[in-house]
Image (tube, rainbow, N blue to C red; front, side, top):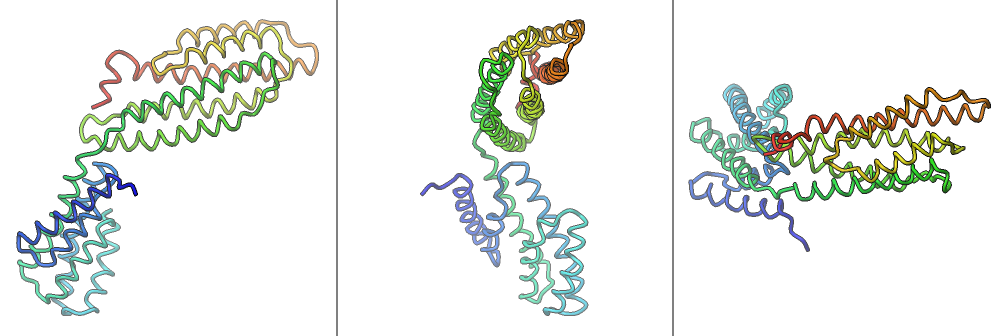
Length: 327
């Protein structure tokens, strides 16, 4: 049985919260442990945001409940009226995540039938201990940069395979297969990296790393372009001089595909190819015309694929730019 980091932090945090609340002489000390359990999140930012929301909602809940308990007494009817008013207000103020915990703390007031400052202080301290420990424990998060780097390499390796297959299809060396498996693998790898990049971003309070988030967004755009290129290539039938030249450039792109490649020289090459393609003699048969149209669409998508990478490199790949976006 494997015990994860979040489980370990939850168990330690709940124990410390209860012991601390007992040491301070607070009533309902176990509630501090429960609040800690509910405060352990996957990222630092989400833990901090949740803690702030819950403290805010607790102040709101105690204030509203005090009004109803004062007017209608300490009974179930008052508690029901409190919920009818508190829940919509909490949702409106975007602190809905604190509804459950705050309502439980209000039940302590109901059980004690007292509106003394002692009990309000007791409930606020329980909340602050639980939420505070959640934040402290979440200050330690395993670094994801190594995993993200490995995911980058995997994504680029799959993209190379796809481009090599497209190059073969342009040469008509073998019947071009749909390669759905490779595209599925690429989409899965991108989804995984997108999740980890977002988590890595939320684990930095200052100088948050936008780089990996932007990187995976760039590759997702390229993935969609590749699916377009795949559809064009399935319709491609006859190899010719232009398709052979395009196949060579596609293969060259596969060989040079890397995180730090600006793709500038490749864009220049494909732009020249498109320009020369427009100057060639018009097709004489319907089959030649359709084949030429497919090839032209493939070229334009190919150029867009490279331009997306070039734009990304211009923003993040220049000297020092990547470091600027990483903590």
